[in-house]
Image (cartoon, rainbow, N blue to C red; front, side, top):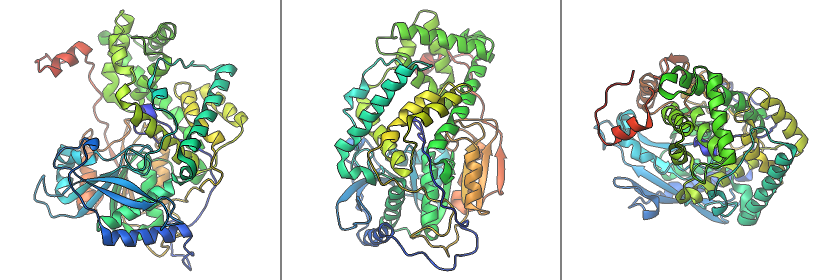
Amino acid sequence: MRTTPARHGAAAAALTLLAAAVCAAPAAAAPVPDAESAGAALAARRATTTGLGFGACPAAEDLPDPVRCATLRVPLDYARPDGTQITLTVSRVAAGRTGGAARQGALVHNPGGPGASGMYFPLLAGAPAWRRIAAAYDLIGYAPRGVGRSAPLSCQDPAARAGGPTQVPAHPSAADKERHRAAARAYARGCAERAGAALAHYTTLNNARDLHVLRAALGERRLTFAGASYGTYLGAVYATLYPGHVHRMVLDSAVNPDPARVWYRNNLDQAPGFERRWHDFRAWAARHHAAYGLGSTPAAVQASYERVRDAVARTPAGGSIGTGELHAAYLETAYRDEVWPERAAALAAFLRGDPEPLAGQAAPDPAAATETENATAVYTAVLCNDADWPGDWETWDRDHTELARTAPFETWSNAFLNLPCASWPVRARQRPVAVGGAAVTGGSPSARLPRTLIVAAERDGATPYAGALELQRRLGTEAALVTEKGAGTHGVFGGRNGCVDRHVERYLLTGDTAGWRVTCAPHPEPAPVSLDDRAARARGAVLPPVV
């Protein structure tokens, strides 16, 4: 599941591979390792010997001191460990720069996506929520295969995605749907043409194997890992494949790992979650009608939004903001309530005749076109490769038409994002891993998974809360769950909620959790701040408190 709003999504139908939980009684005999598992074991042994040579980061990474960078060679195809190799980029800030705690090892981070780069992660070492953790751990970021400079994947010319405006109807007609079907087929063909035979090797299973090799190259016998969104699924798959190589694991904003939901049904599950969060934003704006004038009820705020949408459908704001760009910008309200004040203010300004704030917030950034296209390509490839998807349009149309009756805000945009998977040109799809299952090929059925920590917001739209409960059930009695009640920001840990942050810090530093299930009160809602106020504060002005 994407953690970057403009690239969100998740999807795919699946099959089940049921097995006992990790913490259940050991299986009678270990399964025979398959070729990929044997290749990963060989690559990890080699990485233990070669290690990582950290040095100054290339200018392309735009990472300042004290961050250091390295590269890691891994097989493109783990069934052929001596075949084509690809290079992954890795970043690090060494432990101890923020305090005198005893070093506990390396903490590897995956920010989600799939398609997001974690190379920036070491920069968080000085942030308050990470300071004590960074004193004890090397903070390790990396770009997963296909991402950034790690054997980058592309499916189309980035310039094709950089332009605007785009017009996406709220209620697509049969002709609209057919246009999207044709575009999805063309996009899938572009992936195959640009990547060739390598396309099949962008999978969650290979991401987990890469993580196993990275752990070995870092000189760590066991992995300490923090994953957000899709990163929770990656972490859970790693824990299933390599339970004996897990030290500590924080899984923030959990994807539902049920093989029957990976990925198509997870996609369907998102729509009601996003609808709840869209309501949360509208209810907040209604409570602050005096500040924004968008309406005193959620329905009235919706009407204001629709007036703006109808207007940009006729005349794009700033020449580049159509309904597609508008929707992408306001989809972010479901991910982060920090953006609520500026999004509400932009709507208010537009309705007063000033389109500039909206254009500034929603306009595509040409400088980010290559990164955006790359992230979308990796996202699509991993999810399409990970599981079987419905290949018939009738299933997609029926399921999404039904969903859109009660959850229209995100349903069709997400369907069209994932639609290339219906005609994906890779025949041999992966079988979703039965997360928590002991009898997984290449795994260690006799190994018990150590204590893990799951963190979730109760009203998260991108990864609905039921996924956290399912992940805890599958990881067993050693998995603890910290819930932020009544909140929905996607990505809970990291400075937003002190209660959550204390639980995560305690776990990473000591291995202890406060209980099997713990709840924290929600973080405060944002105060209504006008765009003029925000600009003044950026200039350092002292303003009276907002009431």
